[in-house]
Image (tube, rainbow, N blue to C red; front, side, top):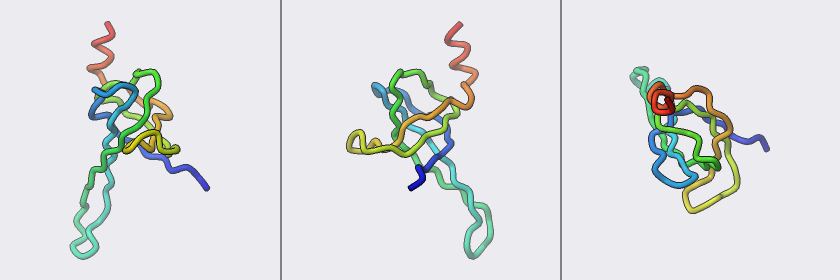
Length: 88
C-alpha cells in the first residue's frame, strides 16, 4: 500500500519533536460550485526539531507514534522568512 503524503504549513512547533501542520484542501461545493477550503491539522514527528512555524513541509504517513501522531516530516520545501531572520 502506498504511503499518503500531504503538503502543508507548520502552525505550531511548541512540542518536543512534534509539529502541527495545517493542510488546506480546496474543492467545489457539490451544489453551489463555490470553492470551499477546509483546513486539517496533523501532528507530525520532527526528530531533530529543525522545523519552525511558517515552514512549508511535506509529511508522510507512518505507524502510530503516539495517541495523535501518525505523520512524519519527510522534507522541508521552503523555510519561512521569519525563521531565516532568526538564525542570523
